[in-house]
Structures are given as C-alpha cells and as structure tokens.
Length: 404
Image (cartoon, rainbow, N blue to C red; front, side, top):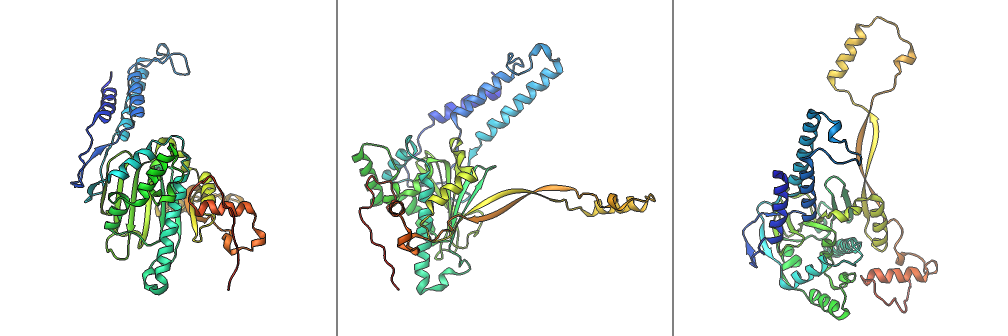
C-alpha cells in the first residue's frame, strides 16, 4: 500500500473513532478535521491501483503495451492526482479567526441529530425556510423604519439575493433585513432553548415519524440547512452593533463558533447565509432547479427575491500596449498593399464570465389581485405557504376583500 493510501485509511479510521467534544458552554478556538469517509476509502483504492499500471482490458492501456518510461509516468501522475485529492478533502477545518466555540443547547442538539439523519424528507424545504426567514427579517426592519426612517441608513432597498457558486460548491442567501448582533447569533442559533424547539420535538414524537417538513411552523427552520450542507456560515450586521459577526458550524458537530467577520462590514445591514453543500446535494447548484424552487417558495413574498445568473459570453479581446506596439511596427515595416477586405478582419475574441441578478417573484401577490381571478387551488397553495408546512388538511374557508 502506498503512503497516500495508508494516510487516507488512517484519516477515515481517526474520524470514525475521534473522541466527542467536551460539553463546555464556551471554549478556546479549536481546529478539527473534516473527511468524508467513503471518499477517503475510495481514494485509498485509487492509490493502491496506481502502484500497478496494469488495469485489465476495460479501456485502459495494458502494461505489456507500454514502455517502462510510460509506466513510470502514468504511475507518478496517478499517485500525484490521488494525493492531491486526498489533501483537498482532508484539509483541517479552521473556524473563523478570533472566534469562540459554544456548545449547542441539549434540546437543539437532539433536534439537529434528527434533521441530519432524516432520510425520507424532501430536502427542498431548506430553501423555503431560508427565504421565509429572510422575508421575516425584511418585514421587521420595514415595520421599524415607519417611525424611524433613519434605520434604513445606506441600505434602503429591502430584498433577498441568492447566489450559487459551482466551483466552491456553495449556495448563499443574502437579505437586507434587521440583522443580528453577536448575542443574537449565539442565542438564536444554538444556546437558548426555545418553545419551538420543544414543540417540534414533541410533534415528531407524537407522529412517530422523522418527517421534518413542518419544521418552519415551530420557528426553527434554519436548522434544515444541515439537510444539504456539510458546513453552514451565517454573517450578520445589526444597526445596534458596529461590528459584523459570523456564526459557523459543521454538520454533526455539537458546537458552533461565533466571532468578528474577518472580511469586515460587507453587508451594511442584514444577514448572509452560506451553505457548503454536501456531495449528494450538488443539484442545488443548477440555476434551472434553483429558479424553479425560488419561484415556488417566493410566490407570496412581497420583497424582491433575485437569483444571480452566471453567463459566459464572447467579447473582442482587449489588447494591451505591447500588442498594439507590435502591430504598429508590423504595419510600418510592411509595404505590401492590402485590400479593404483584408484590413477588416474579424477581431480576436475571448470568453468573459458575467454576473447578473434576475428577479424571480415578479407576479403580483395574491392579496393584490382581484378575487374573481384567483382559483381555489391558488388559495390552498397560499395557505400552505403561510402555515409553513405541508399540513394534511387544507384551508376550510377563506374571506378575500379589498378596503381603502
């Protein structure tokens, strides 16, 4: 077995047998290792295979058909690639600089275990909950700004923006709502047991299922992020706090970290949630799926919800001064007459990546439409959204009227 293979297997063994963290309320910043066991074992197999250049007759070159130099080059390349992949996966996790660790409250910890191990839940609900939370934060700052307009400050636009990054495999939901202070992050996201947490646990026990689709009804929908994320980072800025803080936690850990955001004040006001997606959740990096989900879950949100679209376009290549000087020298030294057609040659093109936000919820809200134009099915869909759950029973009756 190669050294790389031994390292991968050792890493998987260590992570499966490492001791549980101490249940302290606050501790010094720590560093932990995050390794996906199945991937590590798979890479170990790659490393072992790479020590022998013969892979059979399934599309790979047989050893008998290769020179010694080719065998050596292939083996070296395979080992290098495998070790690089192992190094990327087994990079130690470092919490935000200057942050402190806090233990989850016991009831929250139990709830997280249920969320993480929910196998039969529609994982799409995480986006429903995060959009709903963002909308609530926007409603709060809008309500407060009625009597105190100065609270909007330099961030007057109340909106939600969603971004996906295929390279980093992250999904980010950002709002310009009320925001949270450092104390808010610690209390709201882990250390203070809320009635919603207890009621949610009670509801699961009574139903004798692990279906967490109604998690939003109990005010703890944020934790559904761990259905799809290995790591969750929450940056937030509140008007009452001069410093922007960041909350961060790994999936499966019994603690989280909170500290000043190393990036400084990038939000102005509001909250930014970044999900580092699991390997089996990369479907949420698809702009088509995201657009469909956002359209469904933001249908009754009054604030603009936009998705950042990534496009690659062809544009004329911008020449630097050196290229222009070389062309001028060539033209000055060339006495051959050229036709107008030859002079008007096609410009050299290059690919450029552009980013543009597209508002998804452009249709008017249901309460802004004429009641004669709304179907019963639309009222039932509206009920599902405001009740924050896929309840078995629909709305039994409703009244829709306009008042000046």
